[in-house]
Length: 94
Length: 151
Image (cartoon, rainbow over all chains, first blue to last red; front, side, top):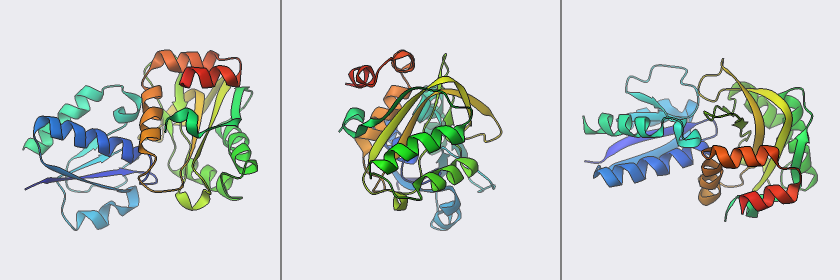
């Protein structure tokens, strides 16, 4: 079954788009079946009800979602990008 | 469609002498508003969003950048504005809001559709990830130079 990654940012349309595409590409390369769902930070609780394996966010998390969270700023800045890609893949392989 | 296809001639500001992020957003957003790309309330909405959900990005090199933007409802047509700053201006960090990021480059995104303009967003990210290009942009002396760096 495909893994679900919630990709959130402030508006749900800009930086999460960049992150979501990068995650999809990395998973494809690693042979992991993944579905990404983009949203605004405040929409995360609603999406969590449908189930998810991981949250990658480029904005601040203001609550504990109960599933792993990876900060995805590196998809924008490039700083530490390989490390967070690895972290995401590790979470999804669990 | 790459960055320069969305970047407006009249919304490129070189060496803006700004004291704070509000002044940068007002100046750059005002240009996009005067050009008709964004609605009257775009600037106020972007300021509010920046206060709650800041957009400063530490780029790991000499210069950092900020990418102020807001929901699609404030935008008429997708466009980009760009300002290089005369001196560092503090924006707060996008994922750690209490961390200050001194920025010298600001790329303002006006997006009119959700999850679109993917190529443009990716090329903005590609620029931010290339410290050489960031450096060239920050030292550009004319808008023409900015366009040639981005093409």
